[in-house]
Image 1 (cartoon, rainbow, N blue to C red):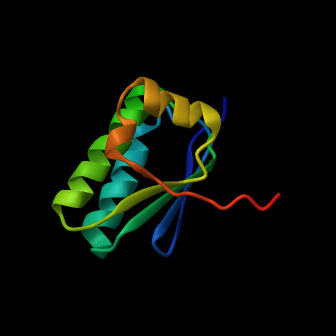
Image 2 (cartoon, rainbow, N blue to C red):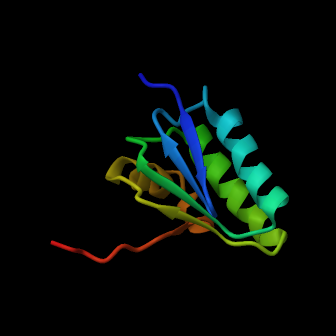
Amino acid sequence: MTSMEIEADGQTLILRGDFDVRSTMKVRDAIYAHVYGTKRDLVIDLTEVPSIDLTAARVLAFAALDASRAGHHLRLRGCRPAVRRMLRLSRLGRFVELEHVADTG
């Protein structure tokens, strides 16, 4: 178990560690501070997040909806298979946009 670390880099929030019920408030606060504080679109980089639980998936889905209502765009980058699987199984993936990365292999 690793605690959640959040780094802001321009219009990107980089998350590192466990994104689950214990860290959702911290992540939610960082997302909303960015969306409503900077009035800019947001990319959430989940490259270093091994998996998410249902509560975390809900935070991402509701944040995407709220950002859209505020006239902003929220996109997820670097989703690992376990993250994509939870978004699909929870049916919350339809509310968030996954950034497509070209295959460099």
